[in-house]
Length: 517
Image (cartoon, rainbow, N blue to C red):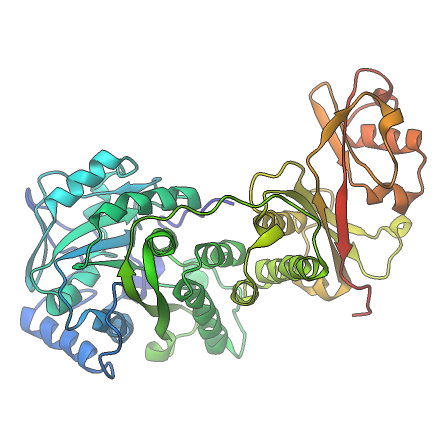
């Protein structure tokens, strides 16, 4: 699943979250776009406010090398931002890599300020850019997004006054991460940042979390009497995956739930950086909502402060994935729980998938590259009575098994043969996972062992597949099995008899217990 486009979606929140505002630009200094709106335009008032947010954070705590901080109006997110930036107090900071979303332009990869821009201005003065570092990134590739995105963008600007107070004199490397960036692209951007890391460099990922309400076009909890608790639980769970330095768990929780985390892709770059070039740990310092300030739960934004303490290290590649073996009972149970958590999160938009990642590690067979199908069956219904409710997956393994199951479960909820699965149906369905061996071609039907082999039939540009359990569930003999398979591919029933390509595979098949709801 790729990242969702969030450009222009979050305009209703004003300084609660994301806005569209234009700001003047100068030849060499990027002028403030949201001074006087998101934070005070008066320098003295601005400094008092920022220092007040920082002073209210109890104790120095462990020094931070990276943080996730919100970028909304200070009246709403300022106290939470203070909890993030307090991690930089008392340490030497000479360079700050700023990662944030672009709310105004869609692109893949990252966008740097235009050449010739030497500083970003706030009412507290000019913050110099690290020109040498920016030139290194331009040569690295992937950082060729539109420089124009920086002009009206507030996601980096709102962080600058905090940096001017806690790290005066530090140079910044402003990077906007496009919402078309996938996980692999985020990892490549992170790798390119590693040469900039040293003992005096810190990283800030700028993001608000859930934007909830009709004005944000995302209101799954509308009318819920426990809305404030739902939003805080979701925010804590999602921020918890970030604090755990879990790029996979964070990404999948946001993607599967549809959560409106505007800085998802910027956070993913940070998490890839931490997962591959950092020794340390993270913690969620604070999670709040604008509703706690305004009392307006029809339009609320969640804010999180996450701090990471430790040391930067050289880049470490991921280990090679293991070969797929026979799944043990614990692995089977974990995958069934993963499929269930995925469906619940996708249909109810809650934190269940983050909870699965918090209690499971993607290792062993779960990390092996493998194809898999997720089948949704009606509980207590026989096949001939319409038991099947959805079944989709990948025959060829292209990603780790855990990822394959997540994506298959989401797709199975939208199997085009049936109406979309609804949340109210979840107690009445039982899930089945089929983990597939790589398919291989056979010379003809006589090589097919019903009940053991799944079969792929290809002819004339059409293709269809049956899993091994289909034969057992239907009781079909081989000619009937292949005739139905041909019809599933949109071919005549006897198309399998001549000119068809037949491939077979085996499957490890396991299902939830058939208990009454």
